[in-house]
Amino acid sequence: MSEINAKIRDTLLYIKANPGCDTNSEALDGFLVKDLEAQGLIEGIDATTISASSPQFLNIRMNTHGEQYLHSLQNPKKEVPVWHTNPFISGGIGLAVGLAVAFIVWYAKWQ
Image (cartoon, rainbow, N blue to C red; front, side, top):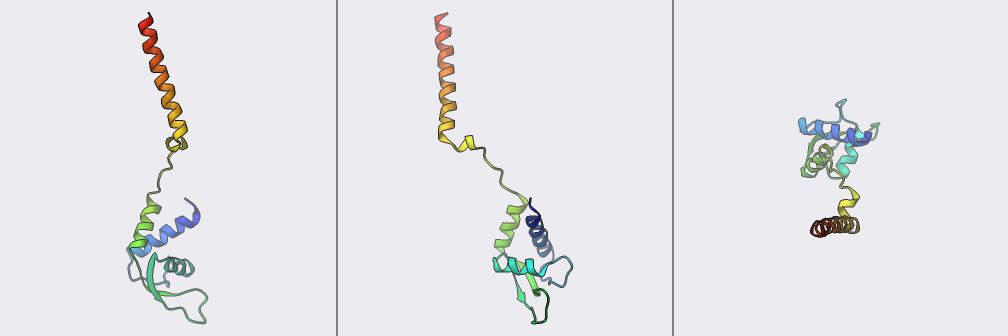
C-alpha cells in the first residue's frame, strides 16, 4: 500500500471511530480532509477562516461512499493472473491437455 493510501486509510479510520470530530485534532490533516470532502467520501462543515494556515472542518463524519472506499483500502482486490483472462492462453492449455489425453488413450489401445 502506498504512503498516501495508508494516510487516507488512517484518516478515514479516525473519522469512523470519532464521528463529529474536527480538524483541530493532531490526527487529522486539514488539507487531506478537504480533499476527502471534495471527493464526497466524508461530510463536514467548512470553518476555514481567511487567516487560517490550513483548512478547518467541524462535525466531520463519513458517508457511505467513504465506508466503501475504506473497505476497498482495507481489503484490496487480488490481481488475477493474465493467463486466467486471456482466452488464447486458456485455449492453448486446454488444447494441449486434450491432445495429451488423446495420445495416452490412443497409445494405451495400441499396446
